[in-house]
Length: 95
Image: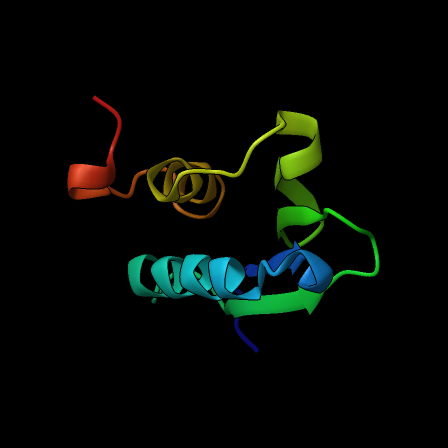
């Protein structure tokens, strides 16, 4: 059996209407990290206002802690730094 790839989860508040935002972020991450991740799991939260992005058990972004949503570019960098530190993100990469 091969080493399992990391799984990303996006926990979002369905009552806040954030499912489409979570689905868009999932699509972006799946497109960018096709070979590096197992998949992206969308989790409707029971906690109001939740928008938490995790890689396995590591929280990489929490909307409540940051006071905002992540930008796509920022989220890709945060995920890359954990799942594939050497990966070049092209135009989404830091300068």
